[in-house]
Length: 337
Image (cartoon, rainbow, N blue to C red):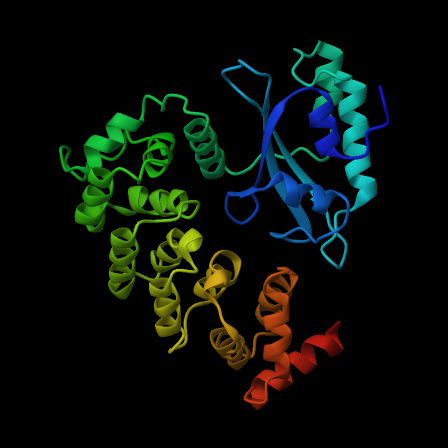
């Protein structure tokens, strides 16, 4: 087998079709061209989380109905570039276990080698369900048996208290079908009735989808009266729609007053695309006013690690309008570092 330098080459040479998704912050497809640039250190990983690239690869042979899925976590350097040694080690383990056929049914020994791969990880249950729904929807596979049950629930055909039998997979399946106007209308009409055990996992599934305007507006309305427990979930639901003007206006209004730690963490971790120079400076200033250096440092480091946001964080640091308390917090941060 020829020398294989990248995961992309490994997948191509094994004659598979594949798709790549970030699965760290939310589930976002990464183009093959961008992933190739990431692998060759021509661009930083676009969605870093806690110093790592966490991504999923779905691959399959032509005619195969169910894809194979790898969940991979690889370390990044301080510039956000992929650690080449870790990537090469991952490839070496896969080749040792499977050779040049990634879709072979592994023997017991091969499975042991695969299980010992330190770069594989298992996402949280809600993310597994969401990813399963997304990949099945994109490959035009059937929905799970739980879909129709949740469809009946959101339409009001069942009492709101009868939520115990609703499966997370059914919620995720339905969220992938929001191009269906009837489903979206039912959600908008009835979402305020959903108890937390339904509403919260629904928001976690919605965070991976660009939402239709009527649902964006309904979620923004709900945020006005949401409990402190539910508000971060509403923000997460808007994550993939964060660049929409209505979401940006919502975030601007939200930051007009002090918010909870969880709201700041959720805004920076999921809705960073809604932040502009002004709202970013406002968020950092409000954090600085709390006089909690650990919280400020954690969110600051998370924001500055995102390549698309890094220039705006630096602009906020140098802003002529920054407050003394923000300047002081930034100074403490760099002295502590």
